Amino acid sequence: MTGDLAAKLAVHELLYRYAELIDAGDFDGVGVLLRRASFGGSAGSGRASGADVIGKLFAKTTRRFPDHGNTPRTRHLVLNPIVDVDGDTATARSTFCVVQQTETVPLQPIVVGRYFDRFARDADDSGGWYFTERKVDVEMVGDVSAHLAVDPASYGR
Image 1 (cartoon, one colour):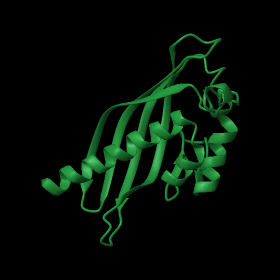
Image 2: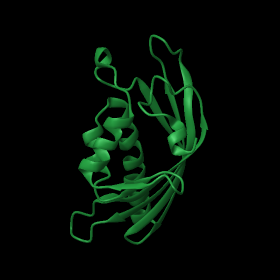
Image 3: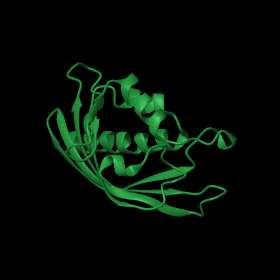
Image 4: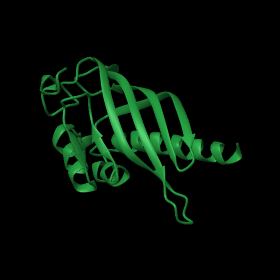
């Protein structure tokens, strides 16, 4: 059980690290975090992989505010993570809520959904955990006009 607990904590750390990087506007960092993963949304929305491709995807689709540290002025809240560990692999499902506030948009939730993730642990002595897949299921969309640089309808929402 001690090993499972350490693994679960490591997976939680990855879940929260993703949110921290997005909110900091560090899309290259998001790419590095997901570099060994397949990343995408609901069926039919496409998949991305590789640090450079994923980082550029976020940079192309997400607005950043230079006067606010080049961040998207958001907070990604990762809630109710449920992690299952099976040896050197793990799965997690969690809820997310993104809130945003700008000069033109009052503080409000803008996107709510679920993450479905898969992880693996390096077999060498490092024991490091990493994403192998992140699926994002957007369930509710509010005013994303100050958040997205693309039309959310292009993603089927």
